[in-house]
Image (cartoon, rainbow, N blue to C red; front, side, top):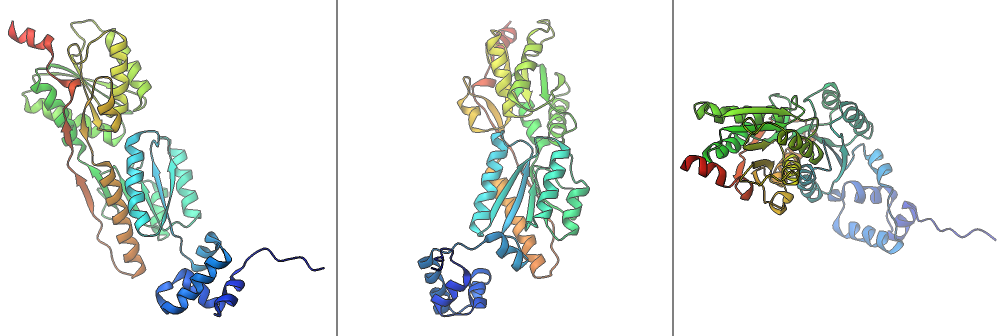
Length: 353
């Protein structure tokens, strides 16, 4: 007795719909060229038989992937999670999928992930690079895979980029602390060779210079931009002599600021009376902290969405064999003031004296 066939194939779909294998293939890969009644018959046959196409094999035959690669520095950071969500919203609208990689701020890991995306022939790549544009990124471009930089100002004429003006963000944060009367401010973040950290420090220095350099700015580097680094830095600040200890801190991101808040409160310091805090990114946790955190807001979802739009614009230009004008989009940050940087009663008493 012959074995009963249980696997449905494209041939079965073609037979039920009364069309050729080529027509079924066209419905899957180029539906716009198939007459609507025919396309409808094929789609009904697929639904009736419950046939699921082998997507990787189909893309290989078509010579095109419907996947976009995306690499971020720290997927555990809600800032980068929101970038992914913003990009996914745009990618989903175009009928594509997103493959997300987390470099964990490790250059070797980032390079390995880019190699995998290249081998998989993704349609394009969105990347928040650690150090900038390296050789692996350029190899993607040479192979016809467009790349858009995220959270990084692109000074290159051959790459699109979407970022926030971090110099202005740093200036807003420290200007606010200066306006509150602080004259001893710590600017905290690292590693110091991250472009975002450098730009935010530069903005802090700019605010102080415009304030006639009246404040002492103490730069403190951290190994990472995470909660643990914030807690450890707070412990170090608490041990400083009271006449040298800053009265305010500007953290390069909100995770660091939340760690600082935890460390200061655990040590018995009052926020903002003994220590004011301003973070950066305005992630959801900032407003929900034990003492709601002031923070410099970045339009995270909009950054991800706009970057994906630029990527699809470049993909379309490649498909049409047309030139593409690379754009550098830079959003303007916004300072959100909450209780963590409110008026310090201690400073008020000093001024009143």
